[in-house]
Image (cartoon, rainbow, N blue to C red):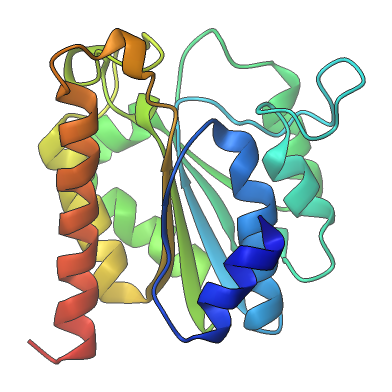
Length: 215
């Protein structure tokens, strides 16, 4: 993954990657950070922290990519934002780990109470402080289960409008790479979640286009 992703980055292209589970994001973000000499911010859209030190003996499991990034020499956790975190399926130690390393958490309930535009502005400001590029990673369960039938069944999440607007703002603000993970095709017979992922990607890329072409 690192080898082929580096080719895309070295070619000056804008990488868009679809998962797979969230374990793919560690090598991708790590290579992206190398490309930008560590001057990157990360906005992680998810219901779950995914920052456990390990899952059993596996330090590279889907539960652990952001812990590996906390430790990555080219990533500064103070420029990492976990956005939309919610629900009882989170390990209680996740918030403590984020705080220990200096990463930021904007919960799903905060987003709903404060509104999507205020919340994503806060996330962008934190991730952009002293950096030159943003990496945006999305787990499908940032969305409420009603909008994401082929993903983890977590309620109280964003709707598609909120996620589209947040990603659009990220594109305008400096996103230079993107992944979207955790869609389960066997649970998606009508292609709803896959179709939503495509739409969300378009909204992010339209924000990037506005930025790059001064539209």
